Image (cartoon, rainbow, N blue to C red):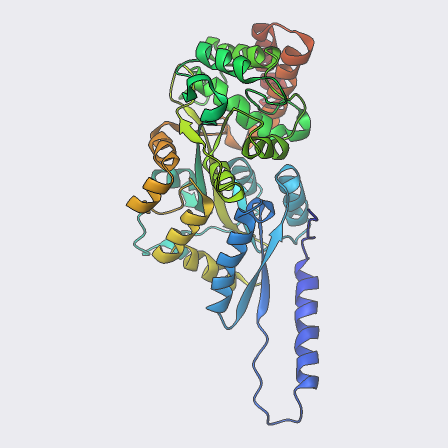
Length: 420
């Protein structure tokens, strides 16, 4: 899929003025009534590049455009792997999209770098019933975004590919089920384990670490990279890597397609992915269950809708944020996102729950969701993530002992990132 370039603000304004001049020349002699051209704002989101959900999200944005006379939103499609680098480079140069859907890691970094606008005054008095995850939008006492998508992680499985059609109840059962399902072009499980998909690798690693009771930091914001529970999670990741049940080196887009093509039995993934499966393969029978780890804790994809501090049309961008938070638009957004939640509380209909029983499993996971950040060191998460993943790769590919790898990670982050 081709990626559309992000236009600079100057280019967008020049194009708009040129188009307006051309319209005036074509409209005929003075005195004839003419409509004023709308100004175009850009909105960048990974979702626009996704199969199924992307088209539906564009149509949703189109409804905003139909309701406006002064502004129009142009969707910008950027793949997940290159999103943060592309957008931050643009924003750092004084340009970039007017509106940005950011993962929570990027959100903290953008706030620290003053790349996004505060939204306290915009949201004040709106009488919104925000979901619990909205608390992560406040940094230093100020709000810089509103939740766009909140997606929990559970085990997605194809009953037809598992013995007895039942999901594993614990980690030992999970390994046995994955091994039994592997063969004849079918794999038992899939996750990411390459630096080429570093962000996704981190998210998948969090599923194991959180599930085994580990956390990257403690309640005081102190690093706990070599905590015994973290090491257990890394060791479990290694067990799966060595079990011969995963398509090694395969990216997420490929193995998710394998799932809906009935070539993959299980994956721990987020609610947005369940929605993609449902849209891409309506005839596929799949189910969901809590992840097969010792605890219910799992990562949570939390994305924020933000306004670029470089925008030339703050009022137009704010109008879109306010439109997004209207109840009917929130409901439609939640429906199109799949098994994800949105900024405000939107109740599922009995019909939806009957047609998509996996929705209930994702919703029930909400109290156990934890963002993919190092609590207390959120803005430093990308640097910490890089070091942790490099050490985990030494475990997966080089056979390093998980304890030594995570001891080294603790030491390296303390000296290189925290300067201690």
